[in-house]
Figure 1: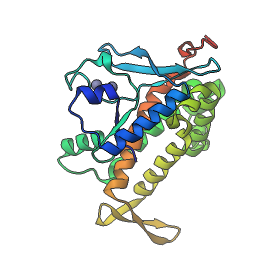
Figure 2: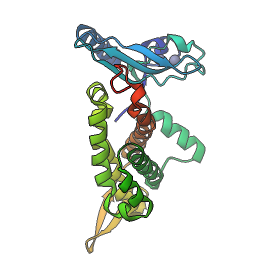
Figure 3: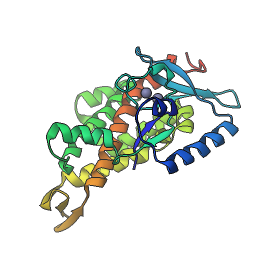
Length: 260
Ligand SMILES: [Zn+2]
Ligand SMILES: [Zn+2]
């Protein structure tokens, strides 16, 4: 379950509420990071000054770079984006995935229902294939993909494994630095599994109490608004990661200049 992350500078500069326990925990984490010699600096920024990438140099000299974690909308909160450190300091309350979920509920005039995960699933799946197509498939495989042959053998489960191998091979630095990258395969599988359950089931008592026809028997499928929120949040995170990935796989993007 994840909430939204804001850096300390953004929390201080805007009227965000952070609970005390969270503050204390984050303080302890910061001390630990500093002891380990981890000090993130902003590597690049958006036009408005908001950090785009942050990074640090490990004791062995390897530079590590990752997408900036602070999701504060500095301009909307009326403070200088340049003071934002881009680090994930404080988890700000609300329900899991609050930003995305609240926006959706606003747009729809209703709480999201499990069927909505299908759209996210389709987008994530398409992005997985698009990255593989661009950075991993051989020319022969691309031909085979275009003619529709490869699509039957390279199913999404195999594609996920292949994508994970690609990221591990090309950007071990990312995998080392960010839990979201080391958990890429697990997260993609989690989303695909949930999406599959929803896609092959239908609602009975409510949208969250469902049944599914499986191997000759009707099986109950139970989910909850909370679980759905976690999954939509996860899908949003994966979409953002997959959107970044081509830049991370572009050879010129390496901080240490390898393969430039
Ligand atoms: Zn901010
Ligand atoms: Zn910030």
